[in-house]
Amino acid sequence: MAASVDLELKKAFSELQVKMIDTQQKVKMADLQIDQLTRVQKHAKLTHAEIATLPDNTRLYEGVGRMFILQSKEEINNLLTDKQKTADEKIKELEVSGVGSVVFAGWRTTVSR
Image: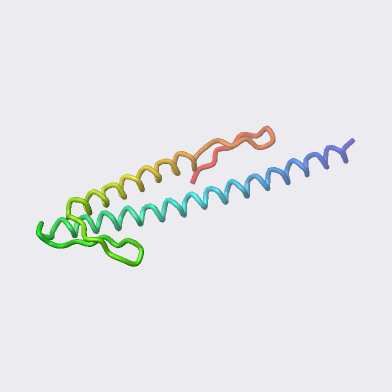
């Protein structure tokens, strides 16, 4: 009887370890994505600040693949603002999904970054 309990405990513990490792990998992936989005957001903010200092008649080009397209200052500012908003929304989504409650074999634990 004690041997069967030991086997059940070992099985439950190994399942718990697998789920824990999986959850840790998901949290690390979310952290990496948040870091990348933060860099994108910062880059867009700095570019926006530099463009704001330029005169309105300055010719601005947007890089598209291997070419550059002439855009107005207003269009470039709108693109940068949209990029910042999109990155901010994705960061919030990842932060919400990265912190949660996970149930392992009857035990409840909180996972946070």
